[in-house]
Length: 236
Image 1 (cartoon, one colour):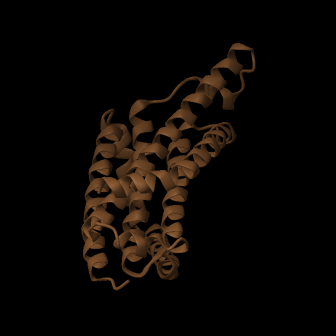
Image 2 (tube, rainbow, N blue to C red):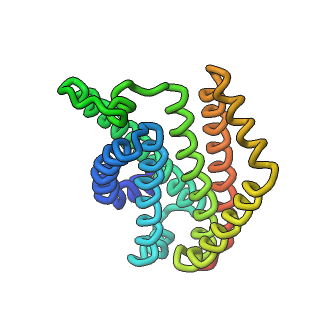
Image 3 (tube, rainbow, N blue to C red):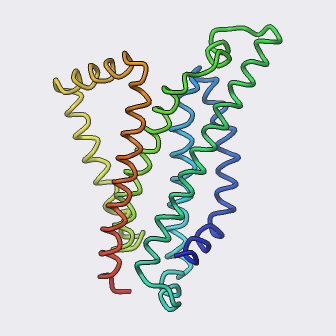
């Protein structure tokens, strides 16, 4: 497992560094354009970690690394667990980049305010953020990328990334249809009332963030177990 994690990190390091720099600049820009520090973490964490994940999966097939790796003294179970662990590291790195971008945007906004450039958008960033709300926002980004990886990785382990990408758009369309149907029904009112209740409680955002984190970990672990079984049955 350690060898698998190390090999993935060696492959990802260049792309992760590039995506981190781009994500940092983009996050600061988004914070000022949208006048909201809470949107930065989910957007940047998903972008950075998602790009790194799909790059690693694509390079596996393009370089023939999958077949060569199985000739080494590495079990298929270790391949799956190592891949999930290395991508979890990429997700964590994306969250850190999102946090740094948010803090940098707030620091710049405070500097602008000190220089007398005190407009609504800058003031909204310079006044700081609520830790509970920010944690909830970051956890939503974590949940989104976790769901994406939890669906993609078993498909990639079973059929390879080239074949897996044929099914991913269909799954996305299905999810969009289901969400659209929910929004068009009375269930959307329930969601709005639920969120109002969460933010009415000072501890509500933090509690929902913890629940989201636990759900993300459980979903990721379940996906890893499924991917391991599919990869064991795959013929290379």
